[in-house]
Amino acid sequence: MRTGRYAAEVADRFRAVNGVHPMTAEDDAYVDRQFVPLDRLCAALGREANEARRLMLDGLLPLPGYLRSDGTQMVPRDLFALAAEAGGPERLRDWFTEHWADPAEGEDEWAAYLSGQYVCLHRVAPDTIRRKGELTAAIASAVAAPRPDVPLWAAALHALVDELDALEPDFAPYDRLRFGGPTSRDTWVDAVRARFPRVAR
Image 1 (tube, rainbow, N blue to C red):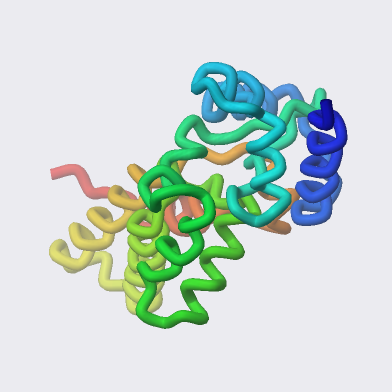
Image 2 (cartoon, rainbow, N blue to C red):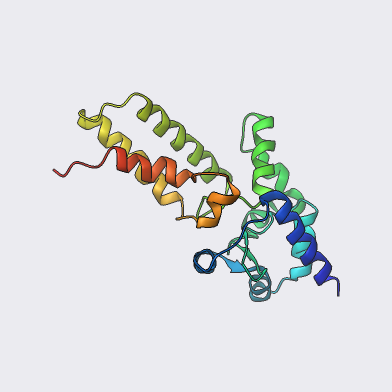
């Protein structure tokens, strides 16, 4: 069996993308709630974990979202969903990138998807990726010209933040290390709510 070699190669690729940062007990607990071990997911679906790792290394499936502190490769429960929707892993890239009018933007998002770093969404798909971008841009525009005393402005801002909140999980503390700073939730949900709290009516 070559599973061990593929597992080691995937772990090496993950560290090359994310850097080497410690996973704490808090990180592990968060990841256990949000993700599933790759081997367990494959066993439940009747798939070969070795083949899934080969697809990751070939750039046909995204890398794991996290490595637990014990090295377990953790993936979303819907890891194979987009490939199935596209008609197979070999068709996934074309299907995925066609969701962007700008081919260069589509390729950038495809690279980000393959990195496994889209841990910022409960469901990673072109529509949720695009909507997150639209929401963060709209929130940034609103807070750049704040009008907190105008009820319609405040209501519109909180509607945007609430929608982004529903798309995003909480993140692990580890994410602030690998991303080198605040997460999108820190910046566009928590900080905005703290700066412009809802006014009880």
